[in-house]
Length: 145
Image (tube, rainbow, N blue to C red; front, side, top):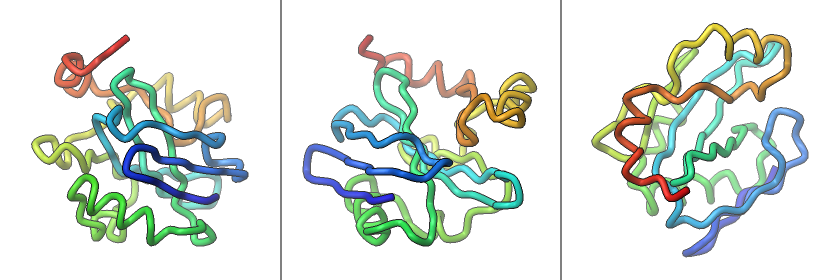
């Protein structure tokens, strides 16, 4: 996996099974960033979740081999004022918004048995989930579709 960004675009190039396929998104389209911890088999995996103004979700699997991991931390800190210690200190089964600051630590996903089963059966991506109703209400004003 490789992370790059410019002043307008985020680009993630991925070949990992547990990462989303490669993507690029406009920075201006980002309305939320969250951190998520999930068990994937025996692996305790961490993800950065990016939510866009169309409520599309993008996953960045935080793995040791990630190229330009430090660039991701700089991007989060400089672009969104995210303290990267929140990434380093993620707790098991965390599901917390990092940006915007007024929603910091609110859950991104609601607990949903259907989603849990689909993840367990490998139907849905391990970092997927049903957006929390409070998040949907707050962000509905940003929706552009």
